[in-house]
Length: 308
Image 1 (cartoon, rainbow, N blue to C red):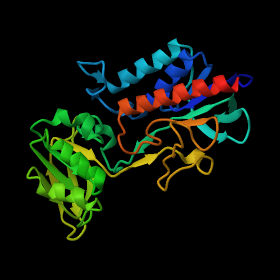
Image 2: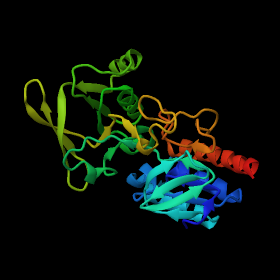
Image 3: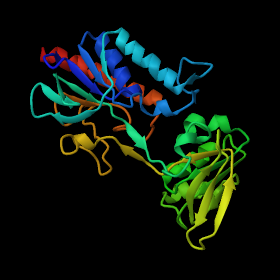
Image 4: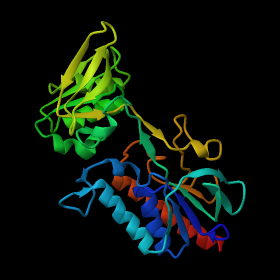
């Protein structure tokens, strides 16, 4: 494989990367997808997906990703389940290092996504998808007439809470400070909503529940009082972190590390394209990531055609 020069190398294997692969392979480009050791993106951590078109009965997140992966392979993509450890965009063709091996390609699509920032407390990881979520637009319908917690204090937390009020019986926002950092407009919407209450100055210590989420243990950081909040679900909304570390200083990013596209899917480096949550910090949905993957794939097909 080290002797092969690919038309395109796709870094990442969530909806953006795999959709891009479908378009590049169908565009007759030799395509290698370096999917990551933990491949599939955030949908691998979800249970039932009800908002991806084409699945009226819903589909499990991992199953949806397996189908996307199978589709790219069917059209001829090579899939490597390993991590890219470094990139060299100063050479033509570009050079990627994957576990000591070198992969060369005439173009690169960066589709490494963004990671949800979790609380990293006992029992949290075990119950993700079992009452713990990070996406209200994805999972709010599962909590009709239920009691739900939202942890966070920024705009994302306000948005999660407001979406949840359309379904849940009651939403409690748990915040570690005595004021929100969200925009004033978002705060006003939350304060006016009768279905939302707020618990201030609480540090979440532990998740309660064995096979499903049942609540959280918290400590008041002003009084040191310990207590337990019971609920049917919890949405963690403390932010996301773009998976862009290996591209730092190579492609243009904003202050948070999200890659900034120039035109369409193009970056500041000719032949390097970007797709999905690695640049989209607004929508962060599987369907929008796939849409961005389509854009990147089509632009790469045109780029390689011009190159040849």
